[in-house]
Amino acid sequence: MNILGIETSCDETSVAVISNGELMANLISSQDFHTNYGGVVPELSSRAHLQIVMPLINKALDKTGLNLEEMDVISATAGPGLIGALLVGLTFGKGLAYSLGKTFIPVNHIEGHIFSGFLMEGKPDFPYLCLVVSGGHTLLLLVKNDFEIIKLGTTVDDAAGEAFDKVSKMLGLGYPGGPMIQKYAEMYEGELIDFPVSRCKNRYDFSFSGLKTAVLRLIEKEYGGVGKVPQKDIPLLAASFQDAVVRALVEKTELASGEFNAKSVSLVGGVAANQYLRNALIEIAKRYDKKFVVPSLEFCGDNAAMIAYRGMKLYEGGYRFNFDFNAYPGLKENPFIKEYKSAD
Ligand code: KG4
Ligand code: ZN
Image 1 (cartoon, rainbow, N blue to C red):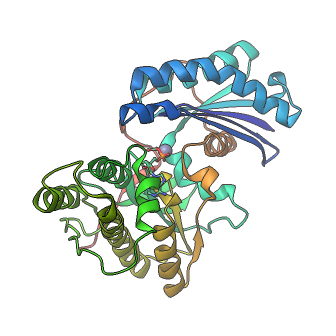
Image 2 (image 1 turned 90 degrees about the horizontal axis):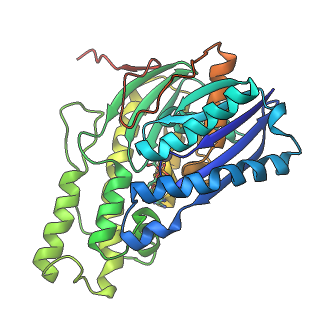
């Protein structure tokens, strides 16, 4: 069975092909020009997707030696994400599937990330704890199987990646912030500033806006405002901020590792590219005797391989969708994700 996956939810256009369970191509075209604006400009993003999506599909197919007619399923990200950007990939996918008489499977972007560990050789074992950390989402999940996910916690304000991006801006390091913060943090050796980790009502929830404000207050007090931090102090601030985010993420994952009988721990999403976070979670998994699975960098950020993989699972699970299935920008009721009902 052959599946074509299309991802256009934000600033990456990506196309992937899975053939008989094997990933044959995963092409990612990043819209780097957004760095000039300090963040993603939605309208420019949609236009760029529109220009590149078909050439990228052709390029991906070329790589596999297969043609469009040989695809059985066409899957595309339906949401959440930027509505204009989503509409490009989704409408393209629908149009192709309709005109070629193929099955069309819309895929939830977060579900794509959740199962992205399965793109690796050492796949997670069910049930597994999944920490989803991206620009838009921070979730701690217990994934029981392909279609049953328990949501243990989420962020009550900013997403982890969003916090990286905002603090990067405060330090004058630009967008996307995560890789820049990591780069500067790696230059620092020594004592860190002890930024506080916020407490939440639900013990598995996260909060990053207090941390962001703490960094801002410090920059204002010590340096007289945003953009005034001298180059020599940026590594200290980057390392201290990164450490505080990672402490928060690790603390909740450790708590869940002790409470739930999970076999694996999987770290996914754009922020999963962060080496400091990876190292910290490797330690937790070791301590709790769980297998640790993190996708390679190519599958951490937005990519179509995870969309094709999820499309394949939905197809195999018998899920079918109509062509009037529409794109959705925000979170909507997810049939596979249930809220955790704590005993206390
Ligand atoms: O999953 P993703 O590509 O897009 C969304 O679905 O949101 O995640 C993008 C986020 C950005 O906020 C970016 O700053 C962050 O991932 N990121 C990182 C690193 N690389 C990307 N955060 C921390 N450290 C990194 N090395
Ligand atoms: Zn993503």
